[in-house]
Length: 203
Image (cartoon, rainbow, N blue to C red; front, side):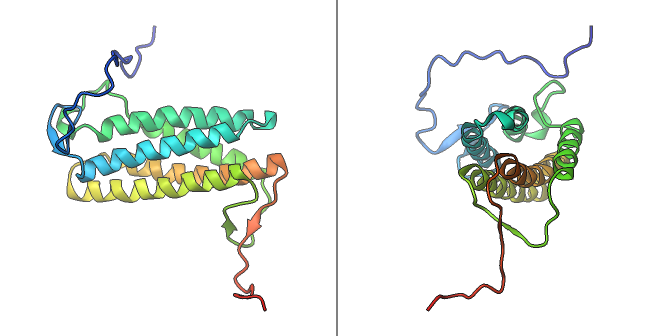
């Protein structure tokens, strides 16, 4: 039988508040007490924010023709939780079985991007968020993903961090863009294109 790459969670979340963070500090996975405004916390806090926005996109993607999109977004939520886990851990404390994103997840995103994009009309202008609530929400996800990427780049520059985390977020933002277009195409929602020469005011 193949060995599982990561250990199963063994958690007992019976108590929600502990009061240990009331002084503005929290614990990393390795037990270190750190300030809640540290860059590492900004990284995995923003990844958590992105996960929440993807949850809203899932709630909006109820149409039967979007089943494949729902499956992809659900998988991405789990991947983001894995990413948050490794970002909440100092590199020297990370074990080989700790949840994380890998090259396999990046490759899968690339395959999905290529598959979805192949069925979409070519673009002759930049796309503006809108046309449907789901399209706009997926663009919110994309922009939050870009913010998470910028923060992880900063973390990588100032302290040790796995470069695969940056590559994953970079590819995920691309995937969310393509998914926004795919969702509009599948549901018949209009795609809003940027019109740079549109009058800036109407008399």
